[in-house]
Image (cartoon, rainbow, N blue to C red):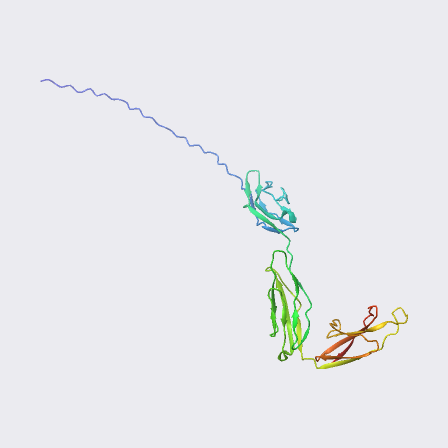
Amino acid sequence: MDIIGQPNVIVRRAQFFFVVVLTAALPVIVAANPPTITGTPPTSVVAGHVYAFKPTAKGPTGSALSFSIAHKPSWGSFSIATGELSGTPTTAEEGKYSDITISVSSATATATLPAFSIAVSAPYTKPTISGVPEKSVVAGQAYVFEPKASVEAGKKASFSITDKPTWASFSAVTGELSGTPAAANVGTDSNIIIRVSDGTTTVALPAFAIAVTEVGTKSATLSWKAPTLNSNGSALTNLAGYRIYYGTSATALTHSITINSVGVTTDVVTDLSPGTYYFALMAFNTAGIESKLSDVVSAKL
C-alpha cells in the first residue's frame, strides 16, 4: 500500500504597511477688528450756503485711522484726519454731484459709506405781496383792489382770500377783489386776508376791513381866510384859487375839489356818507405853484 506523504505546507509571511499620520496644531491667524464708518450725509445744499458732513468712525484700539474720498465735489474740501466734507458752492456750481464715497482705513482694513449724491440748487426767493386796500365804499359804487405780488422766476403765483365780502368777487389769478355793494350790504366786513403762494411758500397782506356806507346824504361846510403873503413874506399878488382835499382818513385825503376863484372863501362838500371826514386846503397862484397843505380838520357827519 502506498502511503501518501503529507503535503508540503508553505508559509508566506504577509507584509503589512502602516501609515502613521501625525497631526500638528497649526497657528490660527485672527484678523484685527475692521474699522466702522457710519453717518447720513445731506443730499442737497442751496448755492451760497455752507455744506458740512463728518462721518462717525471707529477702529481697533490703538490703531490710527485715515479717511479718503472718491468723486469729491469741486467746491468741497476734505479732511483725511476727520473725514469731514465741507464747502460753500456758488450759483455757478449748481447741479448734481454723484457717486461720492467716503472711506476710513486702519492699518489692516478699510470700510466705506454707501455712495451718495449732493444736489446744489439755486437760492430760493420767497414771494412778496403789498398794497393798501381802501377801507370803505359807498353802497352802489364800485370797489376795486388788486395787490402787487411777485414770485421767483419759473414759479406761478396763485391767490386766495378768507372772509371775502359776500358782495365781492375774487380772482385767484390776479388777487383782485372787486364788486359793487348794495344798500343791503351797509356795514363792515372784517378780517379780510389776501394771500399769494408760489406752491412752496405763502405770504399774506395784513388783515383789513371794508366798511360799506350809505349813499351820501351828508354835507360839510368849509370856510377859510384868503392868504395875502407868499411864504417868503412878500405880498401875494397872483392868487388864482384853492383846492380842497378830503377823505375818511387823515393820512389819505383821496378826494379833491378845485375852486378857480380867489373871491370864494366858503364851500359846501356834499354827497357824503355818514362817518368821520378829514379836510385840508391849499392855495395856488397863476403860475400853478401850490402852497403847503393846511392843517387837517375833521367832522363827524
